[in-house]
Image (cartoon, rainbow, N blue to C red; front, side, top):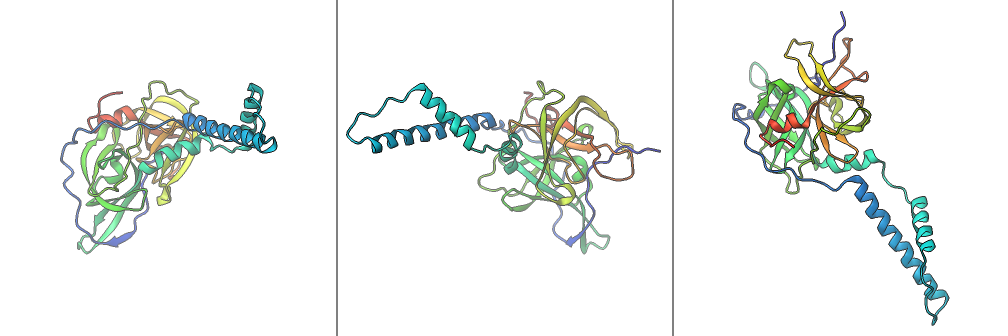
Length: 302
């Protein structure tokens, strides 16, 4: 009988014992407003403008050097057009996906959960997933199945800082968990979030995460559909109103951000569909809309 795809998880490994994570029953605190970032298009326009200014300045200096003591020739619209065209022809701009990832990557974290052995002398890695910082004081969103049942949770930030974390809230109906990092980098930034109201099938998106613990890794694709329903093979409650996408996602991507080409998070990667026993991606992934995810930490609707 065909089996639908599985939630992300990683193969267990062993690590030395450390103190257990804090109690996970505390309700989620109200979160501060989310910061915003300049869009990719604005960055590119600014770079092009500065490049054009540099070219025009060079033209002016060359004119003065070639004709010392004479009045510089007035720069015409044709000169400006030629300078802009030359800049566009000779400057390599980053792809939309690259610029989008650069905007969000500093807010993406690796999440690992551990369980204790029966004798309490060793820990087993319960699973590896991904999380995204949504409040710069250390509030992180991930999937509930990544940390559920873990006695200790660790977070690794973009700069390499590793710390423990506690679960401060859960939203089982959307497979979401809210984590609070016990220590954060001084320059930690929250990811910019965007409503899915204007999201359409065919829109380009990128998924950022730690597939099989490797990462952060990036894959790009498009929104395949909206309002999807997914039921896990473990018989848990079905997830509804999901974003379907075809950017590659594998075990370990769970909890990571689904990002638009403007560098804004529109969803939290949650599950993949695979009718075989293989826990790998075959082209169908699902993400919880960011509105649902933000509600898990008490953020107001967009």
